[in-house]
Image (cartoon, rainbow, N blue to C red; front, side, top):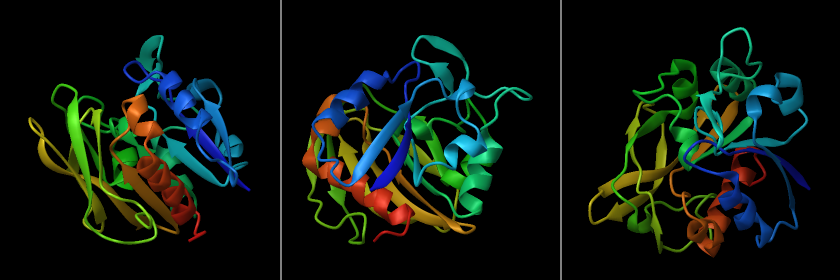
Length: 220
């Protein structure tokens, strides 16, 4: 059984989307523990209880409080801890709004260092087409799919990423939407789709997520 710590619920991305998406997911090999107010729960010791950390959380405290998640001298698991967690062998999967940490509006160099990129923007929600561009352990068994979603544009900051997926939309062009990398002794996988429930209920996205979790903890 793979014990997954999933962090979600920020101002623009309520946890209900992910909770509903997980309800009907085949999680026979997974247990998901969802944390919404990470600032007051996460610590290095707490995170160490799990096999993998999945971050679907932006920089706000939670969906009802737009104050920042990270506060020097208060937050026990912040950008530096994310970086150190992976560098020491931890597995991190960043999904959708998890990539909004570290962009121009919320610069967090330590988080961007480990994530390997950051969110730039997106057009209005529209049909977004996901195309697999490379076959590996994460894309195994995954087919191209399309859903209405926020089509993220991102900046890649790491030179060692391995892209395996791209998304295309009418107003968003074509963008890298999935990549993986190693960082120190750990592994990172990034998936940019995931704003809408339709995406979380799509069987191909679900397979991507589960494959990514297995890959970052070396169960491939």
